[in-house]
Length: 325
Image 1: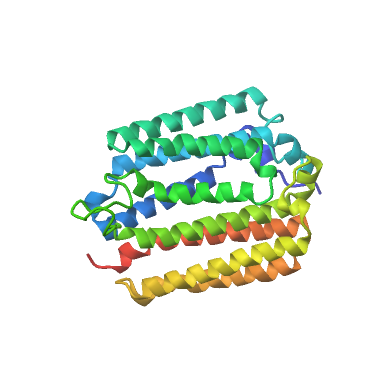
Image 2: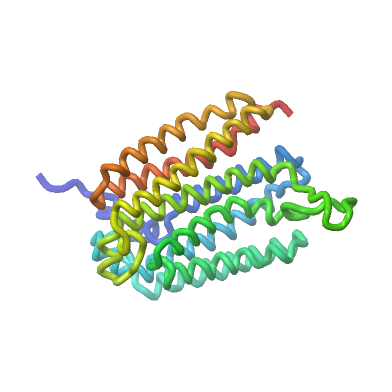
């Protein structure tokens, strides 16, 4: 009995585009921005949040920048990816290098242009730098930083948190700000949404860092063959796992601190309940990490970490249905 044809076998061109830009990751980012803007609207008022057209404009710019980052990563990683998992990277196989390069250039330029246009229209010239900075960091990460221990992971984690923060950074007035009536250097007035959104940004940063570190352990053989010096390649398993356990401990602390904060808000006990399954997921992740030693085992843990990131994103949307306006 032969092997059942996969999506890759049936639709190689569609699979190539899917593998190049990773649309599910981009949709998760767009969802996070929508829910973050909802937090801003809930705590600061709808007039202080981005309007629907502006939010869709921002989502489009972010998705384009992210698609470009995925494309350049696939372009520069094609040899290591196919050495580690043959057929996993479409560049050079189902898609030629020129097409991948055009996709990278077109999406990146379009994303930066949309971000600049939105920043100028909202009278936020400082926000005009966020998209070019993200595009530059994504390029440098794919070119050099992903082979460095820890630093490459931190860059990706920063960009993940930045994507969630953009609805607050692009809105009129920025975030945070100083009250116009405050004396100089006194009475820093932070938007009411800032403590809430800041806690979710911390979780996004830590969860993304954790996943990137686990991914490095999964890809260790390929990175070693490509002469990269990631933490997974340079350090023993015990040291890598100790670092990840430290991140997991920080995330558990952040989850329970956020749950207590929500418990004391209008959302009440119901709003804090998602902390329990998320904490259980981290416990399962920690137990799995203790036994993991193969690429397949680390791949499963990476998938679990991504699911926990998705759960954290959905947690941001709990206030609207639970709180009466």
